[in-house]
Length: 397
Ligand code: ADP
Ligand code: MG
Image (tube, rainbow, N blue to C red):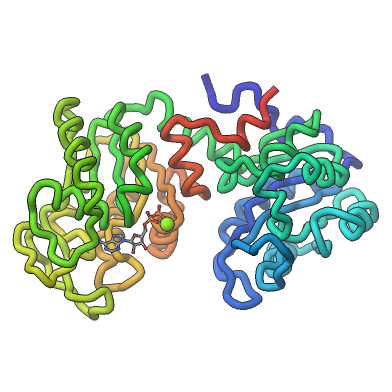
């Protein structure tokens, strides 16, 4: 069964002359008053364009950052709305709130093919509580509902869950559809051999997905700080490296289960180490050679080669989490090496998900060489774990 069964597509929605609420994910990084990375804004454009071309009156809304339950100019949608206007070469009218008289007037004045942006949904604490009355207030602004915010689909928030159900005409946007069909290929019965690569900072963030993957991968490659905990669990000295002491037992359980299931679990055999995260260079060390003051900050070249080899012939590859402290040039080689290896795989369906891993792939200029680059970190992991996403379930029926 496809993940999209029972969900209407935005393509089939009657929208001409109607007010269509589109939940987008414009939770973008800002530098002062400008958008530092417009990937998420660009990702919403196909759906917005489709609706505007069909003569809809489009009302977009999103959250941005973590305002503390009230209006806060620092988290205004203004820079995002401005960026969207620039990218689409059209006017985007910004309302001063997401509910109440201001937005009602703005939306009431919209003509067919025009677009308005509501102010940050999280200026109201009711958004995160999926508050019914708040949902009803939002619902006054639209005749149909579209969710194109995959990055927020794992949250049971008002604009994602409750509001959808208040609309008889509700549909998935093009981005959400693309995410569900790509990630659905990993969640269901992935074509084998299936290789998963997990990295990033913490085992604890990713236990759920590790567990789920153990039931279906052929090869599991672990890198990043997460690998440190596994190496420590095997009895190696990790010096000052990031190690989650309270997850050592869990790491041992995972190692045993992988063994029982005959899964090839690939851990680094060399690392790039330094004595501080601010070091301007690192030393390649065998994982057995770390001293008391060494920190493993990246996987080493032999580990990149081993990961590359383990991916050869794969039909499906899912990658989440960088292989090292890639934000710092001396420790970016492992992540770049893996990104390059995956980008060169022939005949494999390759997916990268996770805020930081995606940023690394984009920085390396390799994003277009992946089969799918997911816009949702937490959402993609929950989906692969087999969990139901509230924002997706709310669209059914
Ligand atoms: P994603 O956003 O792709 O899901 P995470 O948020 O789980 O990834 O982890 C990303 C962070 O992990 C990055 O900030 C990266 O610098 C850090 N990291 C990865 N490996 C190491 C390491 N060996 N030591 C310290 N930090 C690391
Ligand atoms: Mg992250």
